[in-house]
Picture 1 (tube, rainbow, N blue to C red):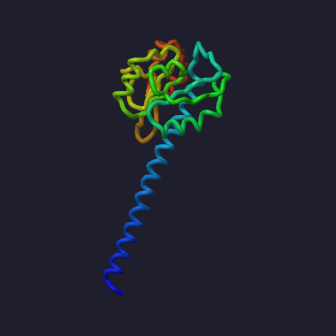
Picture 2: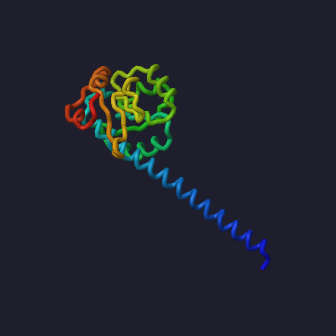
Picture 3: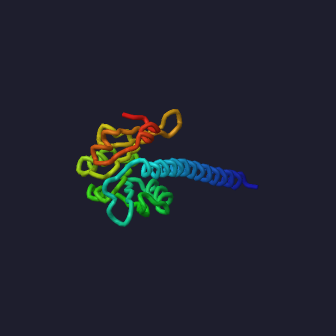
Length: 179
């Protein structure tokens, strides 16, 4: 057999193996992100049980997600069949500061921090629990997801929650890291 044919065949096999390995790596990274958002959706759902909204008008309990399509689809899939405060949970995509006024909970996962800060600064958070993934506690977030020793935890500010007209249970404060 011609040596060029053998080398060409070996090259094709290496390219196929490299493509498979790259796909497996991408799939694994996507799977890890999906599992993080699945866990965060459980946290968010439990926040609905420990925070009291004075104003729960409307036909749905609204959770808004900003800036991350993977977080949006995973959290939507996990929450939209659940209920909070006697209402079906509706998950919407936040695209502007005006969308925050419709939300009971606004979740802003790690993405463009500058854009998140612009939306936070341009919004009225009365009756809205702001949850972030970045540690934006000094910028208005009431709850912020963090990783500590490879475990997901959350920081929580009773003051920030109460500033937007919400009440929080002591048990939620004790489950988080108070700031």
